[in-house]
Length: 94
Image 1 (cartoon, rainbow, N blue to C red):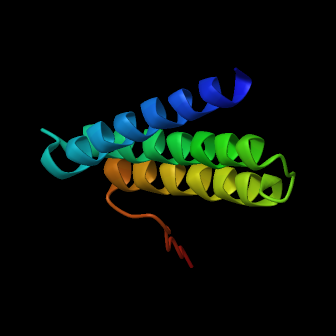
Image 2 (image 1 turned 30 degrees about the horizontal axis):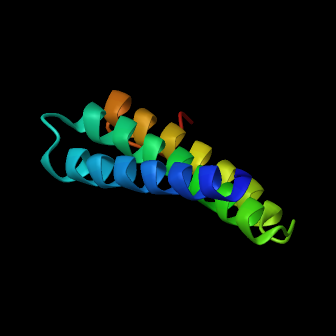
């Protein structure tokens, strides 16, 4: 029973990933695209976790941690770019 529930939840998360891909491509504004990219990172983490539970192995947990860190850094960088127009500030007031 637990195996079937994991498969159904994997299917549901995959379908939501398709909706997020549509939002990234056809988003009405740039902030909507950034939010969709962040949600795609979260969904990808969920897919990896579900596959890890289906295969009954902890081998993918390092990939989940790495993807979570990269997703967070990417979201912060996109948000800073949308707010200020640049990611790395080169203020050299000499």
